[in-house]
Image (cartoon, helix red, strand yellow):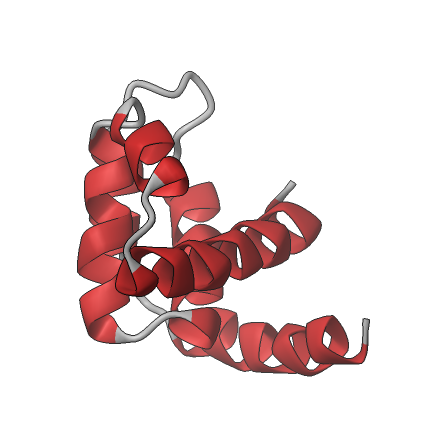
Length: 101
């Protein structure tokens, strides 16, 4: 919970600093077929990504936004790198859900 609180502070800073949806997760969010995709929501989600994911992770996460069916394969992967990414991706998702819903 303390980790989430620290990330919340980082998210607030990122949201205030973000002026346009120009980063990988935000762009993927805007392109996704989710009915509620809008610029404000996608900027918030990008801010959560900025607070929790590296740039490389963001590129990978953006692919999951556009092809969500691939997340199951990633989740079930036995590769150490995939497992570590999945843990970071879940943390990103929890933060985005908490602050962007």
